Amino acid sequence: MARRSSILAVIALLFHSGAWAASANEIRSLLEQNKPQDAYQLGRASPHMLGDPAFDFFYGIAAIDAGHAGEGVLALERYILSYPDNSDARFQLARGYFILGEDQRARDEFETLLPNSAGEQKVAVERYLDAIRTRESRYQPTAKAYMEAGLGVDTNINAGLGSGATPLIPGLGTLPAISPNSVSARERDTFLTASAGVQGNYPVSPGVSLYAAGGIDARRHLGNNNDVFDQHSLGGAGGVSYLREKNLFKAGAFISQSWVDNQSYVLSYGLNGEWNYQFDQSNRLALGAQMVRFEYDDMYVYLNKDKTGGLVLSTATHRNSDFVGVSGSWTHAIATPFQPVITLSVNYGEDRNQRNRDDLSRDIYGARASFAMTPAERWGVSAGIGYQENRHHAVFTTGSENRHDTSWSLDGSLSYFYTKQFSVRTEVQILDQISNVGLFRYNREVVSVKARYEF
Image 1: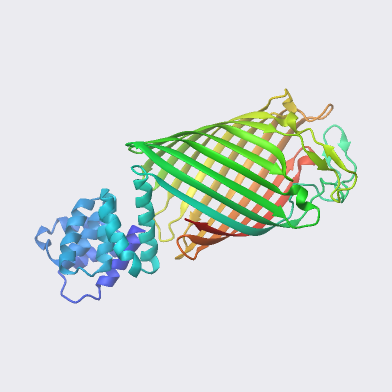
Image 2 (image 1 turned 120 degrees about the vertical axis):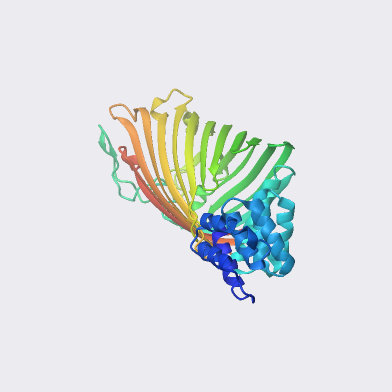
């Protein structure tokens, strides 16, 4: 972002009148070639040019890009004394203040520029202001909230098998064909979603803050009798964070309650911890650990989609479990015009059944690769691929074998920001799960469009 803005400022300055010294032209040329270190060293070799407006402008940008923000700010401040209305110079000066940690001065300059900014410069100004607000959360309370609504199509709302399928059970053979009216048969439907949430941060001492967040989600299916698959959830989390130099530590607790068909389905709660290390402006490492308890409730369910035959009581409580997991991720931001960010992550966990049902206890292995980028002003694109294995500890049933699931997922999104607060997002998700026990083999595709407002 910084280099693109620098080049834009250089191009804008081409239209200014006045003769430039050879040193200024050479620095400008090196900046256009994305060689800020060379441009800075060239400027350092020409101290007699300090005070010349054109030289100060280019040398100031070169110094900031090369990691010498203090020198760059001084040069740009001299330039602005001669050309106070040059918005490109003021943008570069604000950027220098930001790098130096002079948040109030940077904010003043960015907020002055914002009303008259357009295109990439406006996007950059808004992002710097967001970053300043994030940094200020270390010293003063902050809060934000969002609301979101969406419409989508899901090809398998119940993760069911195709009608007529004859699932294979190892050691036992195949089961009778799945009836089209069975609640386990694959069901396609359109759905509505809604969600809202709030989060806040409260500093208690330098580098130490309390954080909290809460949210609600709901999904309603529009097809006849598919209300039995409707679901909603309510959750909250809170904890403490500690920031020291390049290290950010977090420890907290969370709780979530989910309902299906307006019946209590599962309560989950636990503890988590996280360590983030910022190697530099482009690379971040994160390690995390989590302990969760899942408590399921028995529910009254229909065995047939048309709700004939009456309700039966499920035995979901035998699924109660304790989960312990660890994860790690590496995030890399690439300094190119589209600002791509790549994230690679891995995870491992053990889900141990509380009722001594080893057939429901499992080891979970997973990995994911994703990227996000900004291909144009107001647009955002992201995509990812995930892999997960579930290895159960005991045989599925007498005479069978241990259940083993392997799933692959693809996902992508395209976002458009009408304003900083209001955006529209299209999401696509594809999931394919393979299992040696045919009852758990399925695929699913979901496409949705969501509108979001943040305040």
